[in-house]
Length: 317
Image (cartoon, rainbow, N blue to C red; front, top):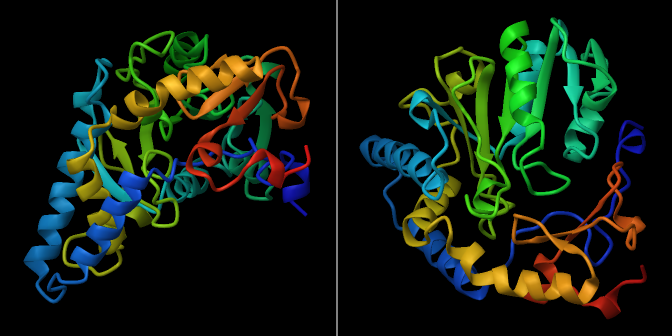
């Protein structure tokens, strides 16, 4: 099985996985907007197109609202996606058969499964070789294993520019942090960056609604562009509407501000370091090796402890 070749599944552990916080206020708002959507006239194409237009306009502004990254204005092409995973699949389809895939150790488990599939031409860990012509790179920023910007990200992107290596930045965790918590800024002007993708699955309790966005500087038409064409019925307008309304109601920094103090306190109790992303603690002393993701630190997620979905007593570590 491909899955057995990837990361160990830590979701069954009390601090395992990466989850949104099912905050009572957010859950109440989500349920209200779901009910509200049921009253919309879905036979009116103008109504649906208005939802889609507002979704893209609000998402890009909301996504970067707490940051001053260079280059955000360059990304003018948008597609709605089923979370970030649908965007990843298109990246593999475009480059997997012709390029060597580069991933950092500790990356999102989906990629660690995909690297073993037959349609991926070749693979090498980012730590095991220099960036070379003919590579393609998919990297999470903030990084999946730490919730922070990879220390050498700027150098990596410069190498990718010089060698014309296509890059996808997975920014699914960007709205779990803010510019003051990150250890460095992110320069989105690099020519090598083909795609910037993100989702609302960790920012809001809508992981099963699959709400995401893919952004590009210039259009490269693929299956995602086909299903995003106007007047087609391929998109999940219910999920899009709920995501739109949650972004309109709650600022991107809302949950970081609400839970940052709780994160710092729980990290102190557990003896781990607070990640820039408020749902995580990072164990750099190997006290919690059962949460290893293949690197020299271990990531703990606090979301389900805070919202009561799990308790320490429910699990045996």
